[in-house]
Image (cartoon, rainbow, N blue to C red; front, side, top):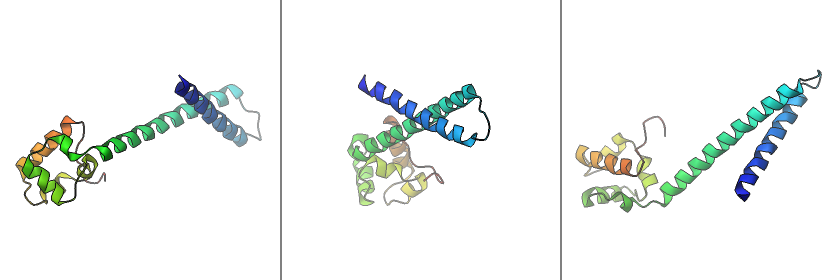
Length: 132
């Protein structure tokens, strides 16, 4: 329950900061305070959602970085081929594209398909070219 209170306090701080900035921009005229308050609250909502996205991404990266490749239950051949490229964690593997994986010795289309299926089973996927 304490965390929920802290989140509300943070949202209020965001809204207060947004409101102060909005009022400062309208210092030469009399603002419509209801509109300023409403807009400030929407800004705070947006800031909270962006903050949560970053927290979720950090948690996912932490999980990936702590997830050993052995949890994927790969074939011995595929496992050792990935290790030969110093890929030890799911995060390491997910940083590679399909094309890059296929360049690893002893990995062909069949092993690639198994790797993609194993990653999908744990909710992960290989990198997409251009999104690295």
